[in-house]
Length: 289
Image 1 (cartoon, rainbow, N blue to C red):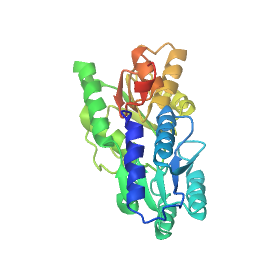
Image 2 (spheres, helix red, strand yellow; image 1 turned 135 degrees about the vertical axis):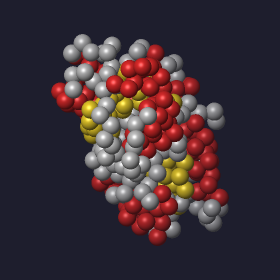
Image 3 (cartoon, one colour; image 1 turned 45 degrees about the vertical axis):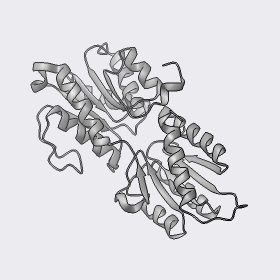
Image 4 (tube, rainbow, N blue to C red; image 1 turned 180 degrees about the vertical axis):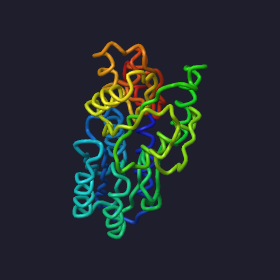
């Protein structure tokens, strides 16, 4: 159980089992609700959860949204699990405030709910949270970017590919962490967009996917063709941004930093697509990256 995702699934599934009284012959149903099916990070999460569920003899049902901010699909998944008699839910919430009423309904129905990777807002809406310190992850890539820029950091032109206008907790924490690491006054740490640092070109909501990353990069370049540093919420957004830069011959001129750490992202670091990727799991350990 060396893989981080498998270990988290083991700990969380075991927590669900040991915290409930069930008949020895009763089949325990647990739900896993991720943001999408396509992001390598969540693919590995599902694979790890499935393997551990088999080892522990519990039934696992997996659900996901069609895109990173598909709250309706996540609400429907939670409601389905309540109706199916699930004992607990593991969820990576897409819209961290909008999903809370459904989470509270699940808990009122007796389910244990554990948030993975992303905190709910408020955090105590879940029974527990198992996640990376997303603010610290942002700080680390911000410090790295500032060091790479050297004396040019003070005059950098910085773009941000965030996730959604609703500002889910994971997006706020990574964004504000990056700014802190880079030396930008973040004002209110619980939201982004209120900063007045002249180095900031702007924010674009990428929805955490390649298409959004590409469109966001194009928009930011239109605002400032001299943009030379790009923060992205995750590696799919970073990959899309790189394609937009490549299309205009700027792929070697912009320093891209990101967070997550699936195999495609690690390969993008190796190939020079992403300058720095904060690795939040060892999901690539079992694959040739």
